[in-house]
Length: 64
Image (cartoon, rainbow, N blue to C red; front, side, top):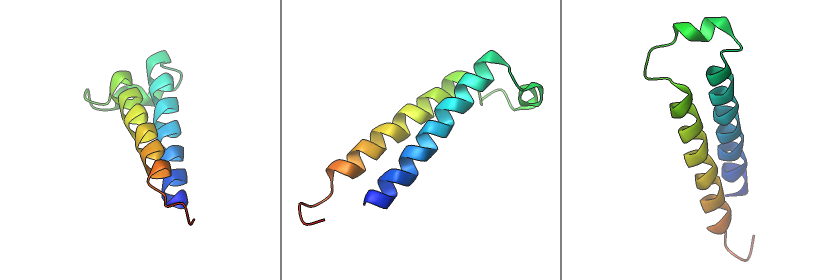
């Protein structure tokens, strides 16, 4: 479960960074994304994935 937590944590962090980049409009070609991929979507997805990372870490057994 540690590897799954690591992967989910990295994806959550990347989604949060994507939300900040989208909100600041730092990259111009991201403006061509469909309307449903807003900054709020990316930051919320990052938060959900980071919470999932914590859930994976807490679900490990004591023998790992």
